[in-house]
Length: 185
Ligand code: IMP
Ligand code: MG
Image: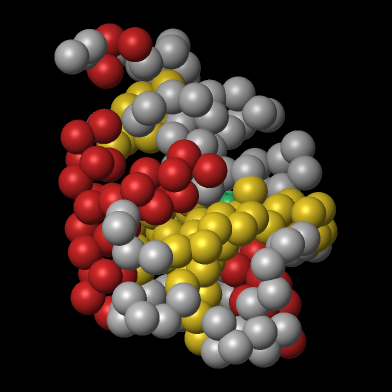
């Protein structure tokens, strides 16, 4: 196996390495499995773009539980690293969630604006239940009270990248989670 820490680009510091992510994804999958009846359809909704890697790993960790998977794309940051609170719906779902159990899969919850907006949309479409699963929770900047059902890691106030998350569209493909740092020695 390659040594993940040696491949960290300069300007970044590893916050959560691959083995820790792998273990956490399987723990989250176990929690979800114990909360859900496999006779009821469950829809995982990935919030693009940041959740794409997490959703792919989580869905496979849930196998063979029957799932449908869809995506929704929202943007609150634009090109900034601070949320504006103005949420744009960039791409909508294809599956009708009416009467269905849904888990919204997020990479990270920061202010909570995105989550509130998307949860409101799913509620107006009469999903039977809407649960939230986020890999990372960054509560230090929370602006909106949010009920999160499944949390991977609670992290301090860093801007993080990797494992799907970006800074100006860079670093999404890194297999670990790192934070932007000037001091990398
Ligand atoms: P919120 O609306 O402020 O909760 O932000 C939610 C979205 O902003 C997340 O789903 C991410 O896509 C993005 N985001 C928030 N914090 C970070 C970060 O530290 N790194 C990368 N993206 C982030
Ligand atoms: Mg996101």
